[in-house]
Image 1 (cartoon, rainbow, N blue to C red):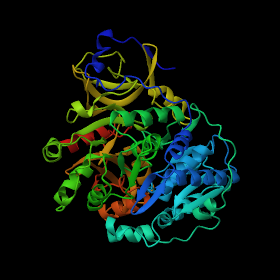
Image 2: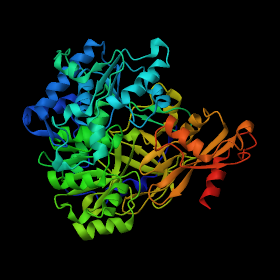
Image 3: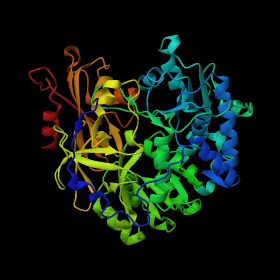
Image 4: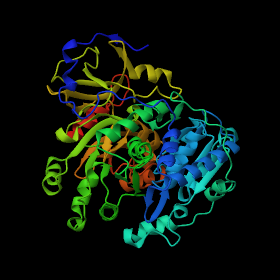
Length: 570
């Protein structure tokens, strides 16, 4: 059971001191499934562009039609209420169609990072007991190889494969978008299907009618995975209601409407990409311009061509765009709202945005467990390098990490969060779930594991982490997961992963490695780095390797990673 502590009453109203007068403090969250949002948008705007994908337009009406047909195909594969279906592909219209098809089928979306390799992907088959995998052509081989390593009972009964070119214009990406040649080649590549897999076009063309939609607000809708200080990634249980909360709130917070145009560049598998690239735009009926991968020149051209008004990103993307020799030729005047998080926005870059374009970058804060933001900077009164204020219906506090007593304004402690977007718990991990929550003043608060403070105007600032985590360009890297993968290397006896400073990424991954006796003098840092890129997602792979004779250990035999981290910081 969560520990119960008593709060200090003097902090109660500080977080509302500068609440925007234009916004309600609480939202009336629809008591429906996410599928109903697409039903509404397709009924209201059947011919309106839901997505723009390098020259190909998908209307809301056609998105609904294809999602219903795909839901019928899922039912034909035996998918029933509560079954898990994995989504393993880059940003594309098919991602949205598949997401809503899974919800229409009363099933649960398991989003998987498309950077994962086969050694990592197997976990997303076994832990959630995945029934069907929907993947892109270039990733289908990873799915097939990961499945082949498992006992037959743990293999997904069905694999559905889509190719990016299937949703592009017949002659490829629109030349007016001027996608770089490597991206064009990747998008138009035709991949062979693994044996037994189904082609996306065949599933849609079958036009099967799904069973009645019965999922409600409190039914499980998505199981995004997040790693932690120990063990393999854990599934975060989000219902239709927890995801609906920020789907509604994000639009009001950022002045969005059906007339807005959003840019989807944050990966859709990521909770932020899910919210601003899959859920929010459909809820409000806005058009979404989809970028399959980051490219600063393409980004500038798409904003100019489609007159993008809303862009959620990570600060490194803004920095990269400004670094383009062509950035002054881009027409960015349509932008109305810039937001993001994952890393702090450098003050100099924020000032350039304000001086050159009159734009404020509204930083926010959230976790997979909170369905993206729990805090946000009001765009009309944003503070730099600040998490912002708690958003709709959120009660956030700063507590002593040990006693869990609430701390006064200005003091540093652990950030805890209560709100309608907080997840239900970790998938089949009762002990981890209990440890993640504390009851305070009759409410269930999530322990973020982040250290921060609240100023006297109710704005929150992050100062450090309780959890062991590396933040590389907004991607969270959990050292324990990388260590577990490194131990599979035949030359590695022991490994400890720490953060190293990086001028561009903020932090990067460093491996401190003890080699096996027979590998010393034969294994180089490049060997370890190259092997890592073959066996784990690129953002997790160590970019720096240091060989040592032994790792420092405590009296109980535990590796003293904090000592290594402190030495690296010096």
